[in-house]
Image (cartoon, rainbow, N blue to C red; front, side):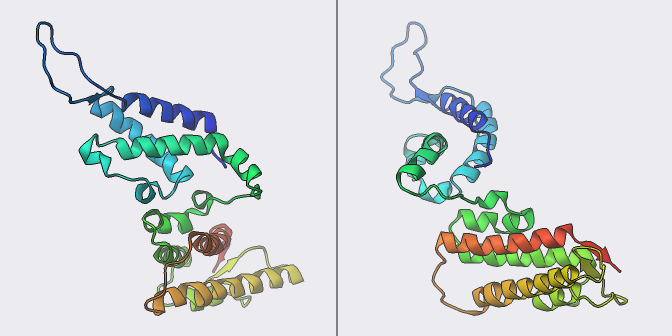
Length: 246
């Protein structure tokens, strides 16, 4: 996992300390039977810490907002869900490698947060609420829109857009091309751009279109959605790194 574990755990520890509940002492000479408890830190301190902690949680436990119970937030304290999520994530950071090794699952892992921003930023909010199919569709729309922005076109989109921008034909007025390398007449140039065109067509014809045009489809399993999101991340990196030839 591409994260500074020591730093992340330090942020977790600070948050847990600030949100610890305690019973404030009674003023001198006054004895009350109250049972209310308060957080150690001020709300200002806790909110500032939560701003950082939430970003770490999004990386370590992307679905913490929906998977960690929040029923105690109203009954006990507004930070109960955050505290449990932090405790779970802390264990994950410390013992993830050990757990995967003993469960015979120490294969490399991929995090959505490390994918190209066009893919992940488009999908993030839907992904975190468990709407994986819609998240992939949102990523596809974002990659399409950013590609349109790069070549300055609104007249074509998705499959037709990528067929045009990755075409090996010379650019035409109003039809710039995206070049992944200089056109040196080599087989590599032809292969690279033919492959990018075919890959983009597969992403939109095979992934994006069925998601958008088929009603009543069951929710995608998270691992399948992650694979599809990775496909759009690959396409986004090619487009982002390409040179516009007008």
